[in-house]
Length: 130
Image (cartoon, rainbow, N blue to C red; front, side, top):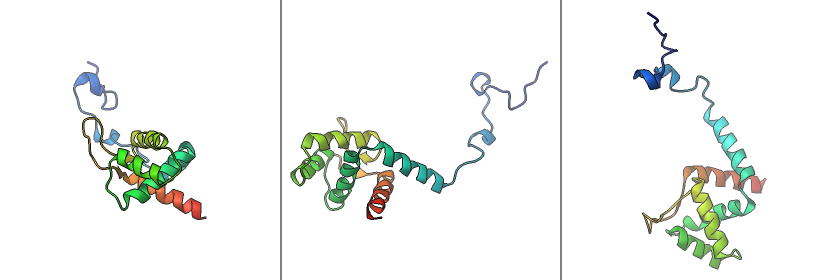
């Protein structure tokens, strides 16, 4: 009879549960390291327009409860950025998980920024000041 050690058991074929010691990585990086990596990645991967739209959105949403469509309309009337450009970039920010709003199944939901977006905006504003 061949007995497998707990490390050799296939969780998918034997029906046994994985040990909790394998549930999380051994060396989990601290929050500061993750946040720094996120901010660096976001700063380099977002276009200048996406950064601008994100910061503009934060300023507008601070004082207004608007849907994503209304947000694009509001910002286009108060800036030189075309509505279609704003709408496109707001859609991309939503796909990236930085903005939350309604969709085809949930129309009328107010737009809001995620915590990750707020962290990124704070970082971008700090970088602009320095």
